[in-house]
Amino acid sequence: MSPSVFIVTRRKGGDGAWVSAKRGASAEVRYVVRYRLGGRGSRVRHGGSFRTRRQAEERARFIAGELAARRIPDLGELVPPPAPPPLGEVARAYLASRIDASENTAKVYAQAVDRFGSLAERAPQEITPAHVQAWIGEQSDIQPATLGKYLSVLRLVLDWGDVVPNPARSPKVRLPRQAEGEIEPPSFEEVRAIEGAIAPACRLAVQTLDGAGLRVGELLSLTYGDLDPPRGRMRVARGRTKGGTAGRRWVPLPDCLGATLTGPRDAAAPLFPDLTAQTIRQAMRRACAAAGLRHLTPHDLRHRFISRLVMAGLPITVIQRVVGHGRASVTLDVYSHVLLDEPAGSLEALRRGVLVVFQEEPPQEKGPLSGPFSSVEDTGIEPVTSTLPA
Image 1: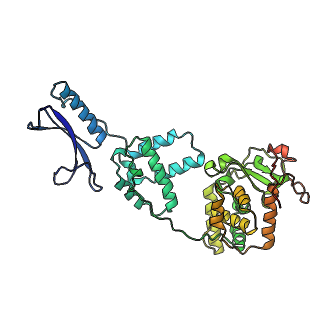
Image 2: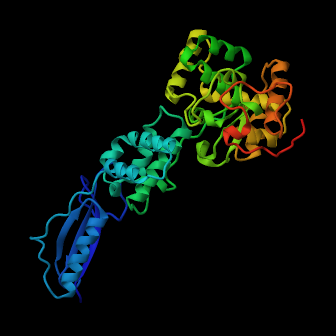
Image 3: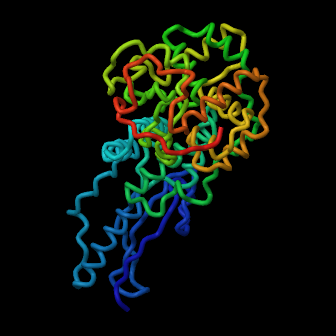
């Protein structure tokens, strides 16, 4: 009988019984290398105990090579393998490698890594689906949709660390169900109350969100070069949209923003250089509390804008292009049932403002708005050739 070498798995702290390759969630797992110098009747020898299967396999290969060369393995002089880096260290290295990620994506990645908690202290090869599920259970203070993003980051980090199979991709890992509730966008009166109570530094930003339906990230990325006052519109570039999936789009230029353009500006200068997403969210939270309103967020203003577009009777395909939805069905399924107590004059003005965005010539009755540009050529924006009916 020829010599042999094999790996078994045992659970530390148990009764010493050998188990199969299953690993428990509540006890540390050790991978133990055993070998024989002869056949099945020869004595089983201890080849080492390791925290990861990869380390055990490296030792097993060494012993197998020695046995194949008809040498007795000398394990006394072997240096113990270095401990693998913890997940937190691997995650930081992964973040540093993602030079292709946008600023907003990098922020989400960093937020996810900060949430790894006790997982960050474990070696990636030691993490099991049970560990991942326990981590999910600890994140009860965040929404399931956000938790899903953080889980995706964990999967990417483990993939980057060459952990196979990836425990975060196991079908045993489940996210909590997302509660499906009706969208309740703020009413006309609620928005007016917020504008009256919000900090002056954030008032124009909130008015722009309400008047153009932008995401907060899109708002903060706007520059003066994105504005086209003669045509009553402004540009949201593809790279600044959510995921970059909807491409470049045009949105109506709110009157509140057009009225602030009083002189020449640097086209590359940001419109809101002193604001952050967190600043706007906190200002809205305080304004809602001061006005005695329910808690409303900047994204609720986007819900309101889209709902107003639907109520104004605009074609769904037009709404899709204005708000940057990847599919028209999202607009139709989510917002077609929402009802708002909105003044008819406000809806008609919004309808006309949106349709102007798709017309080749600016409206003659309004005339050119005062601002940094005297013509479309000054903005570097090519004319729009769509001719949707009003």
